[in-house]
Length: 354
Image (cartoon, rainbow, N blue to C red):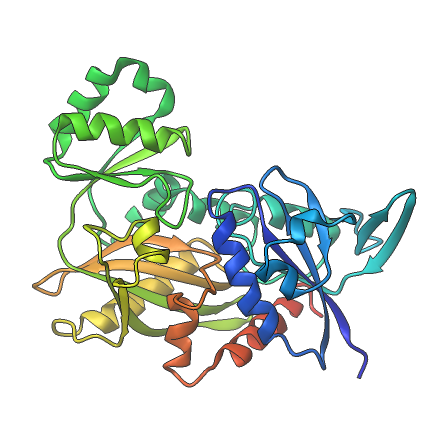
């Protein structure tokens, strides 16, 4: 069997750069090397693309010192990686790409657009679903049409913050404290904060504005923080995993609580009121299909004490770190990480009828 060339993209220019570096180590170690030649390509935080020789370079954080620039050609006739060493350029054929990129300039449709131009199969959602799902405001508009409950919200544009009093009054008229402030385009809880009063609201708005020009202020929902993994799309029926619960060590599951607080825990198949778990699974599939999802996503909800299910957000390239819920949920269904990664790549290869 001739092995196919697989490019694993990681890093990126988003605030989730470090999470991507953790994720790709797990993904790359699970790829079947009998089927694929794995080519690692890292993107630095300032946007420089580099050929990376080994997982060890990612583990010891020396990969940014690489000397070989490597970029994907958008030419659909070539379907290749251009590797530049000094004055020489090598063209390496590419059969499939696994963009292990989280957040802006990776999970938002930008890299997916390059791959569509090149007609190179890739793991995960396409341009539309990636862009819509990355933008929390756009996602809310689509989910509204499904009749699925979600938190009440007020959209805020960064430019409006020059008149902070006006913005704060508009939010206070619509929502009661406490509220959560989120950048519309950011992940891993970067730039997210809770406000219990006007002072904290203004501070949170300014922090969110560092991450995006579109901001979302939401009512607080009290309940279990629940996540559900989905897989499929295209000619493959969408399936949902079981559900998992986040037990955050902090007031909410922010970036530090998620990745650096050992007291934060995740529980697979938690006990929930009534048939809430099944309603979460059904809603996750409907939302994934509504945004035209392909491949994978993790869909997040709140489940209230009375069993009410409230949609939170969707992530089209969920983490693959040691503590990430997406692979953990499938593992609980008998699909280990190696099988999951192989299934995702195989599904990607069917994107253009391959």
